[in-house]
Image 1 (cartoon, rainbow, N blue to C red):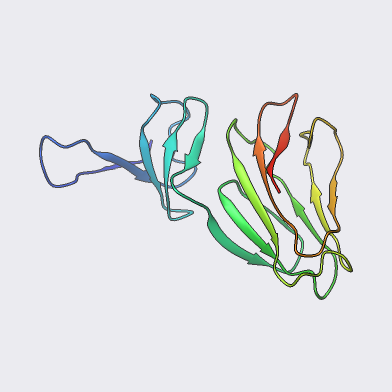
Image 2: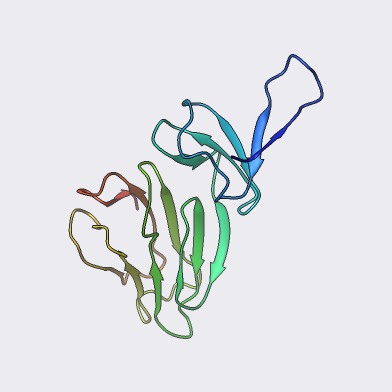
Length: 150
């Protein structure tokens, strides 16, 4: 489990802190955790850890594996990019994708499913709309990643 960090007052609750690997697998809903790997405050929602109040902004221009809780600003102006979803997501995990240069129409974004369905289908997702932005949220192993908004 992560380290406890005192807030300096004896009767105040303590916050957990540590790396992603050190997060407790299961705690009571509402427990807060400061993740040193992602520099985000996370809350346990009863089934998984989700970021509090927003996403980490990550700019990418080449194919890579993505992590939950991040907002990927994808530059495909030099060529197509494939982003691979996490292999072991938990219910409530969210990932955003944005077309940074407006070039998805000429150089596509491919979202690789990595073993979990996307919109209930075991296949990749190809985004070809210039200027597109979307959020995926993980439901279960059956439904997989669902489009939360476009």
